[in-house]
Image (cartoon, rainbow, N blue to C red; front, side):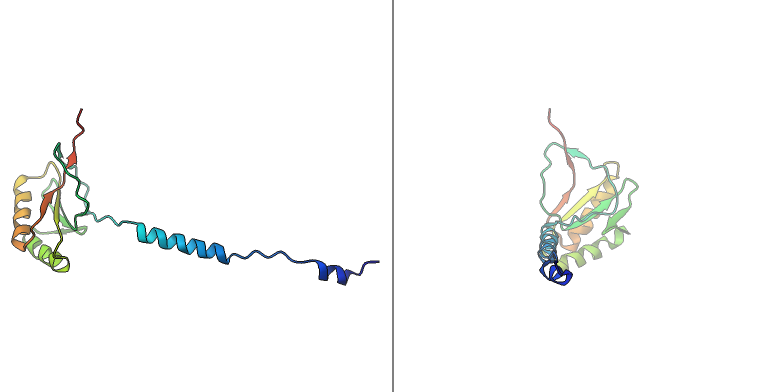
Length: 138
């Protein structure tokens, strides 16, 4: 007759070690955090004008949005035309090599866009661009 106590001693319990799984999950999390590029946006949706000579810029550090109603946005906040210069000076103080990209709606008034460009130049910005969409050539 087999003793029940001996049978329990010989029976090994199965254990699942999840430590390597947790390590793998943390490594994947760190990998995706490091490789993810964070996109800066102006805070408004605009319909960009098209241009056949549009060139892709890899980075635009300072984005200024101009809506078709003439409202100006920086870092998702509406700002006044008179404060554009101060905001750009502050951004350039943080990053002196920063470029300014004006994301203007194609229905916006040219006068507002020119005034924004002028304020950026007076703030000391050397590289100022206007965002466009590339037209499809047939």
